[in-house]
Length: 434
Image (cartoon, rainbow, N blue to C red; front, side, top):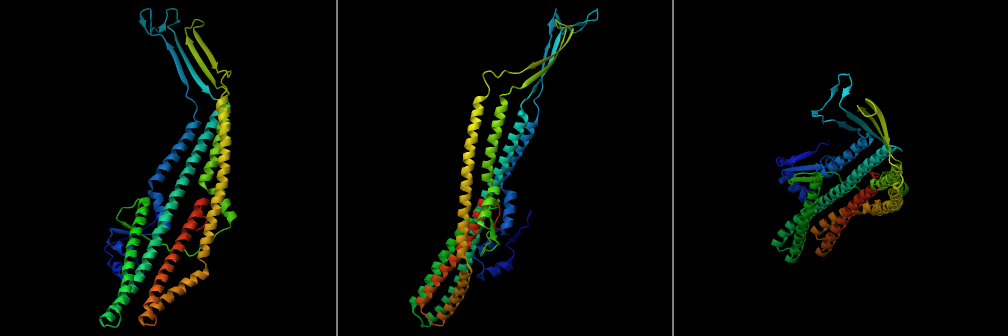
């Protein structure tokens, strides 16, 4: 079980820093009012999710139930005891004993019947039960795969929104500092009120953006709390940073990995195996089972102590299970068609996810990284130039708006890269990209 680090409200030092440090978003600063805050890596989220998710627990029980049926299929049929006893004869109840000549008095009959399966029916049932157990395991893996994709998407969504909150926090700090300086200039009569109000409108708009972003973060955190079964007052802070780039294997490698590991595709293959095994079982059912019946009869009409052996089996004259055999053969053809379609669908899904990841990586190339770094420096210089009245207010506002939109696109591109990676991992069925 991974260790998680909780910060309680009494940690005054971190709280004090967070209100003045633009590296913290408003969501992170608000976490100081929560009962506890959970700083969570993606790996820790995965472990907590597996340990606490009730849907996965239910699926585990289903796997155990199907494994128990394998043992049940291996068991032999129980023997059947038949007996015929004399209750009353000649006015005597249970007239058992010996006559004066030493012969036994009274009659009773005992028979043991044992059904013996033929044509390997029991072993074929064991194979069917084993395939059902494999299907249950694959369904569990598929459920884990889908829920993990949802978990990772929610985690990256919260991560993206926190990054946006940090951007807004830094912008707000700079605009507030600028606004305070302009207020002093306005009071001194050095600038026009319209210039002050124009910058103030930027602050008001930014405050609205921060509020909307905080609302979105609360929604994303609520989704995570549901998946991780956390209390409603737990504040989640993603620790991992948004990736800038990923290493992608060849497309053929991804497709081959998917054909081996994708649980949904493997389940379709197991369905085909099940239908093939079911046909074999149905064909075996046309062979009659044998019932062997050892029996003993005391004081029978034939002998005083009669031992006999009965053998019975149905004669397959009318019912040779031909309907079920034909149905099982048709089910195989249907399953084959489903597997072929699943193969084509899987390869197309992997290819589409691979191409989307490539396109996203192209948007995060080295030249764009250099552009964002240079653009951020230019924004700081633009702010400094405006304070020194080297650029006009119109130019500064235009640059501020363009810079904020560019930063939001950069964060969105990083989020797109994460989700594209997760989509490819989802389609292949393994973490082919770490």
